[in-house]
Image (cartoon, rainbow, N blue to C red):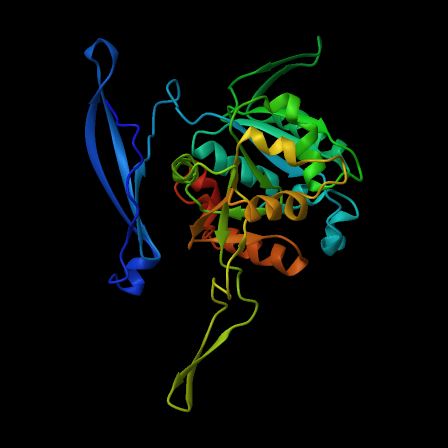
Length: 333
């Protein structure tokens, strides 16, 4: 049996800065369950930033997933800073490699075993609905009988997504959109992110960390991408130029959150801001945890961001897509 007692958090200031940034150690063990059946699981031990966090990281089969839950994606904003694209489509539908960024986000969640999605629609929500209706109907090979108008699928879609596309209002704020989904979410833990950012964050590890911390919300803290290249020195001489480094200064909210249903008590109405009215209040009450992710993260706020993400995809170097079954498409694009 697995003990319900929370493991100790060890502070280790003696660790080197490189080790303290990120280190993973997995060990395999066996546990007994009902009827004496043995299942093999893994424990993930993470050393992050000088702290040693032991907690279970359970990856079960599709029929036994412990962490199956709703994934809420905020997809209703105006995207005014990307007006070159969002005048004609909502920001989640702006394409990277011929597919909307929303598709890339869904693929990332699904690759970690989370495929039950709630999309909070608003601005130009009809185009998102139309995309998924056409996507489900046109993907893969078809057989058509022009005489009778009969259409048969020759193969099933590779995606096993369950999507609920919910209109949450044109002017509704971020918190208000989440509040409008309360009846769909119920009393269960759920995940939440924005429809304009991609990352290679390990979502199973994120959920495990959330359960370990026991807070109302755990958000993924990321380093903001630096906007400028750097100079490389030897003494007072410049010896080279670095490309734009991934990490800027400080930590920011990168989305990819895990939430408890208790947060619905913090929403006042459609005007509620998730960031200012909910997250800040939870932080003041000690109910907001940060899962620090030192890896890749990038939002798509501007045309420059879009071009950068497109280049990563076209170069076959998109970190958010590595290890997925669509890697062949990535390399061929």
